[in-house]
Amino acid sequence: KFDGKGRVISNLIVNLPGQDYVGVFGMITGGAEIKNFTVDNTCSFSGKAFVAVIGGSKDAGGKIITIDGIGCEATITGSAQNIAGIYGVNMGSTAIPLISNCYVTGKITGARESGAITGWAQKGTISNCYSIAEVVGSDGADKDFHRGSPTTINCYTLTGVQGTTAITEEDLASGKLTYLLNGMNRNQSDIRFVQTLEENNYPVLSGAKQVYFYCCDGI
Picture 1 (cartoon, one colour):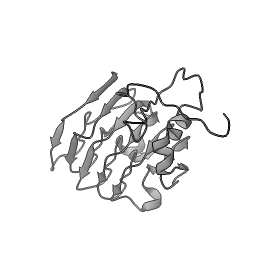
Picture 2 (cartoon, helix red, strand yellow):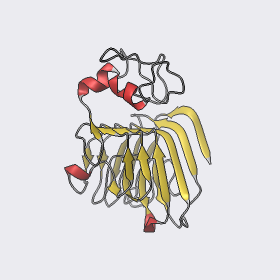
Picture 3 (tube, helix red, strand yellow):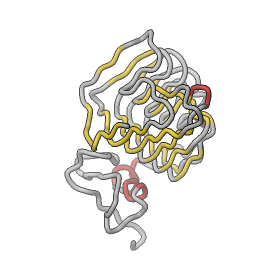
Picture 4 (spheres, one colour):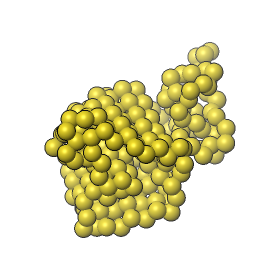
């Protein structure tokens, strides 16, 4: 188990072009719980296959992997398959990945089965996440949020692919997306995303000095 307690990782450069499973965590297995940190835009990761904040999982034995509250603003690059922002590969589809409250804004470059949130996830759920990342090397522009068949719940992209809801640049800048990700919670209790409108052009998990304000349709 790892709990980053909302901290931000900066200036982390990992350059291992011949290596698989590259990330803050290279490989995890069933029962792992990784949560609550952001890798900012001063960071970069490069490898061969399975490169992400969490490179991937292997021999998970059908157990749940919990990934919650992770932000990826870093540049992620790989020369082979399954490159992603958050989670690279569910090797052998032996894990049940539950991914929630995550976001990706950095550029993702890889080969087949690459995506913004995950490479090959196959199963599990992706909930309350968003991506505005540029993805190069996916299996098509309509398949660049995740690969495999995880269930997508309350997730957002600029293009509305793979069960996500389409958002605009104005939705990002105005605080509307932050409002939606927090369940349209007006009293701002138990919120996961924050945004200082004058400083942040998109919702973040940590580092904002004040919470957002957004109002629409008289709410």
